[in-house]
Image (tube, rainbow, N blue to C red; front, side, top):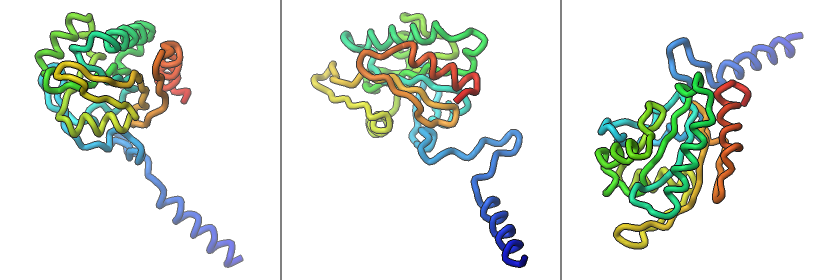
Length: 195
């Protein structure tokens, strides 16, 4: 009987050591694989300084582009717009469409803001980010997105759209041709609490 009691006490103490859930109003503990563990500093298209943790709490659809690209990026932009257009409007405040520049030297906040307006991507759900070269490279590595400057105005890069849960965990990537419906289905499952 003592052994059973001891095992119950031991089991209770082990359970108590597990990750505690957040108190009301408190942010939950982030998983180790969360993108929000990156401590880099960013600027958005409005010139606001932020950290990736500022994006926490929404489902993220993320792509890395550069605004002066004339080949792959216009296709990625079109795909992001198509994806965004398929979301139920009542769910749009739970989703952020995040475009991260791989050319922060050219893509200043002013340039990104003008680019967003020109492409009809100026609602609150659209977030354009730029940082320094090290933070950009670190972010690309997390996404397994490869890019390389091949001239002063041109980059070679992977075409990847990634989906992150509100806690920053990567759950889906579409690469190459990019199946829009797969991205939309994944986001809808997260937003409606089915994943």
